Image (cartoon, rainbow, N blue to C red; front, side):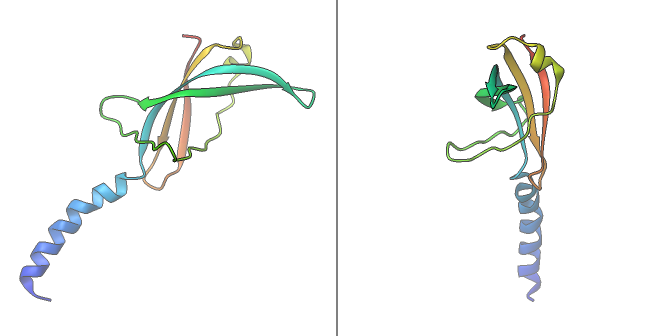
Length: 109
């Protein structure tokens, strides 16, 4: 391979690598409300998410309208104890491979 082409390709690959690796990363603040109800005779607790934004100024949180975010909320007794309609906040993060992690930040605040 031509040495000039090598010197141009290698820096381009190094610059593109962090962008490609971080493309799957997200760090979002999810806001919603607690909903209690009954399904098939069992008391259920769920959260209706109504807002998604950046967790902080340095975080990446790009979600397209057609993009689907699937995750399981971690079990927490604070949700069951909170009245229906209580505000909740979650931190939703994914790593470069897209593995999600969800953390309850506050309930009713």
